[in-house]
Image (cartoon, rainbow, N blue to C red; front, side, top):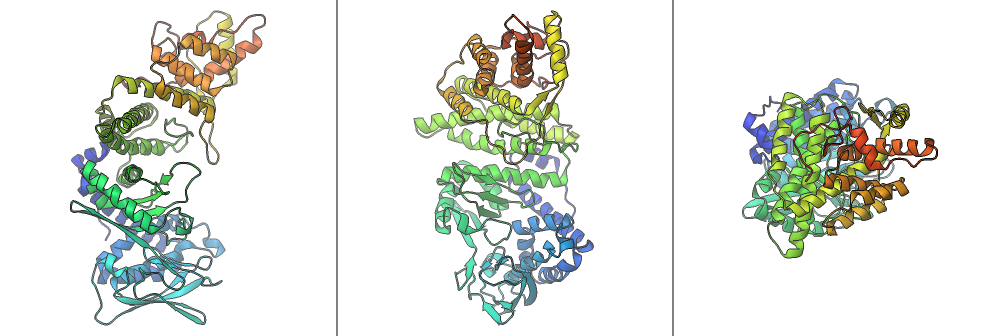
Length: 589
């Protein structure tokens, strides 16, 4: 089943531009299958090998009898996440808790789908036995493992249809414990005594079909009990979302039909909707209850972009290694590593496609909202591309990938009004991010203060460092959120001199700095790029001069920024050595 995979140039270019089509998705899925098998080989050759060997042997036997049944398990999200964890020199191996034995549950599901007789030991986690893609047996007691026995029914073998045999029509499944035999329902797709089946969601529209497990039978995933909606509600919502995707985004819908593998219900957050993917689980979307079909459609588009890029990164190297999270991305409150920046840019290409279509129709209020969202996402994607081009050490293919993605962003046209507002919000967002995470060198700040007092030019600006984030990171706060929300109703930013006065009066207020960066960017004043991309340096220098210059008022931030830029006549140039990203020809409007 392991093969050599090559991405043809046209397919690479189509993927880099944000699409690719179903054939490209199938190629990525096949490559991910080979990766999973290589990880399995690594596990078998490592210290965890003996724990995985019986299940691997069963999986090989199923593959010989029914290749499609084996593939349905190897392609599944649970296999990828299990293999990545166990192949990483399982941290629990030396303590008797090796996760390699979890392969037994996956091999048992393959046997059920193939109708192949089998007996395999499967771990029990906190009294539950998880058969991913099939269901969960609960209340098994304080045992470490159980024996799963699969017995084919006479003349009932169904062949390679994993979906039908997953319902158990071709075999009897028993869970054998000390002193007890638990028999699953004849159709494991139905609830039974202490048996919770995995629900399957189905949608079909204009001949394009989608069939996904609502995956809850994995010890490393949230359970359905923590979700805020039951399978019937998910089913109805998916049908509506699928109609939207097929009608409005037929090409993307074909990709989803070819590659989407599962939906995992997440617990609902305090506000809004949360969604995610795992780079090890191709085609699996984790999402809290989205409540409306538009949101679900957008979530599927966005998260599947992540899966595509993760699989592509298995085949090509886009950037040189540098895992330090130090990069600015407009859509996250925390610093990100290179891979996270590229992932965000790529996911935004799916968002752009969604909102571009939405902005072309519907009623006036919905269209206005869609135009705004499109403008903001385009501004964020533009800034992300600029950051990647100037900060990442891209390979030849990485530069080509980024260029194709940039062309997709550039092709999205906007009305000047929404574009100007989005650029204003983006400028403020970046300034606030710099204040939260960037740390200028204190000695260099004192030296700049001396040069200012001596009437000397600033010269090359000192480099700064980015503080690492620890734990979950919240947004910049309610005050900044209110400022950003007010921009939608403002035709123009306040005059820069007015926002500079507000900063001078209260230099600790993040929203004041955001407003200043937005004003100077919109007015194209000298030092605009310094105020936006070295905000922390302007703030610390302003503070240094205010506290060390007796008897005089410190210069206002506008004057300081123009001086730091080193070229007061320039509108947006931050000088040759400011540490700010170089101009790549991308505007923020």
